[in-house]
Length: 126
Image (tube, rainbow, N blue to C red):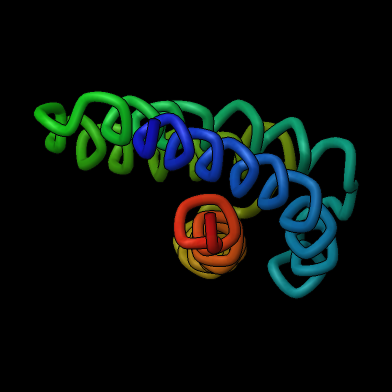
């Protein structure tokens, strides 16, 4: 039952990162000479971060697949960087910086929400 709560908190954190992160990525686009479009940012986040958050949920349900998360993380960064060039028309010299900053913003949102939700779901008084 606890692993189900962990998977649920990961999914809630993922949804929050997509919603709040798309706003922040769209606002962050201008300094990187990219298009500032929130629906496009949401699409990019959904497409690129899904492998990582699914791997986190899989790890919560099946702890033996811990290396799947690392592989999914590398793939997520790759997809996000390629998506910045294709969807946001980010210039090549700016892609690495935009990817790095956006990636940590999105993971930060997901991490904080995951801590809050898991605290509510798992460690709440019974």
